[in-house]
Length: 52
Image (cartoon, rainbow, N blue to C red; front, side, top):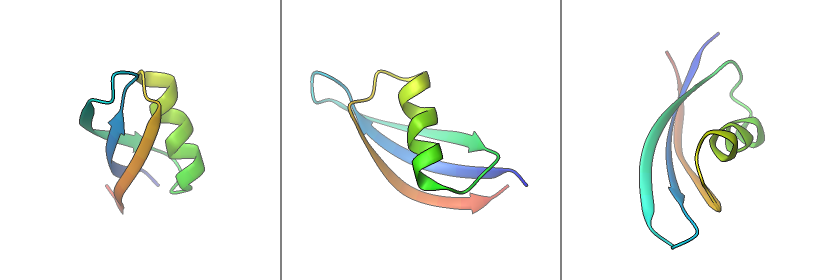
């Protein structure tokens, strides 16, 4: 089952960025790891997670 997560993350200069990430699991730790792997994120804030 595919999940869509709305994310806000901050980078090393403390700027905020908003993205949507598609994941196979709804586990928030997994989604946080995905965001940190794809983007230069220092802190990740998960806004929502829903089914696609």
